[in-house]
Structures are given as structure tokens and as C-alpha cells.
Image 1 (spheres, helix red, strand yellow):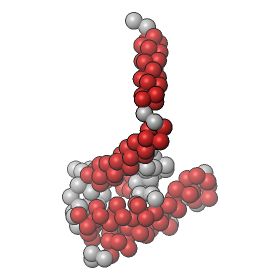
Image 2: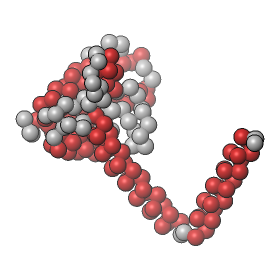
Image 3: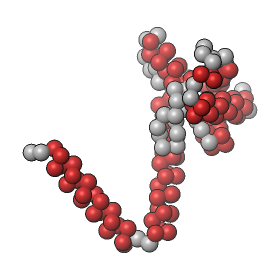
Length: 164
């Protein structure tokens, strides 16, 4: 069996399906559906992200995270709204450090209390404000994402301090 033919056949059938869907659905309804799905996926994405990095955190931490992400338009993991990495965030660095140190659950960076999440965010913010390499040596796009990451941590810390 020729792999190229399988891919071509699949692509052609997928394109045909999309064209028949487009004919059956008015354009504005189609765009509304796409926008709704994107919003649902963003909400699901933040939930999945929190299950990963804060499985034992209290609800106050998760709420503060979501509010800060919504307020700033970015989260502390360096992830875009579509789930792709924009840069290597301080929280990702902490996960690698946890794994290197033999932490049994290296992805859990928020801990099990508001205070532990506050400490993790403060540490990440400190590391961003005191980088090992000058920020201006990075691409402009990465510099902008790092600024957003700082804004996120500042907002997250402020929201967490309400519960301390």
C-alpha cells in the first residue's frame, strides 16, 4: 500500500466533507459555531492545565489562576490560547527542576495550599526579574511573551494574597 495515496485520499475526503458542510450551514452560523468551540476549548484547556500543575491545590488557587489568565490574556505556563508553547516559562523550568530532583510528581508546582502556590508564583516572578541571561538577547516575540508572563504572575500573586 502506498502511504502517499492514503494521505491524499484522506485529505481529499476531508476537503469534500468540509465543502459539503459549508454548503449546508450559513456562513455566520458556521463562524458562530467555530467561535463557541474555541471558547469551550480554551476553558477545557485551562481546566486540563490546572489538573496537571495544581492537582492538589485548593479551589481558591484555581480560581485565582483562571481570573489572572483571563485578565492578562496569558497564563503562567507560556501557553497560547490554542495550547501551543509561546516560550519556555518559569513554571516549565520548575517542572524540569522537580523532575531532576526526583520529585514523585514533578508537574505539580502549585502544591496543596494557597501559600505554596503563592510561593511558586513569587519564585517564578523573581526568576523573570533576575534572569541568568539578558532578556534583550532573545527574540522580540519571546521578550513580549515574557512581559505577559510577568504580568500574569503579578496578577496571580495579587489574587492569591486575598486568601492568605
